[in-house]
Length: 83
Image (cartoon, rainbow, N blue to C red; front, top):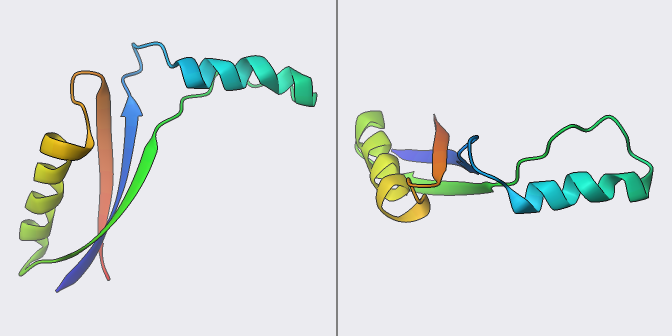
C-alpha cells in the first residue's frame, strides 16, 4: 500500500526561535499589527510503500527520530493517510 506522511518539525517552545523573532520584528514595516509570536519550522511530505499502516508509521517514526528532526531542540508531529 502507498501512504503519504505530512510531517511538521518545529523548535521546542522553550527555545528561542531567531527566525520567528525576525519575522515578528519586521511585520510592523508592512503595517501588520497584532502578531505576538511567530515560530518557523519545516514541513516534509513523504510518499512511502508499506505492507500496513503500522509499518508505514514505524518507517516515519524512524525517519523522524534518526534523520529529520534533531530531538534535542525540535519536536515533530505527523499525519499518515493512504495515497
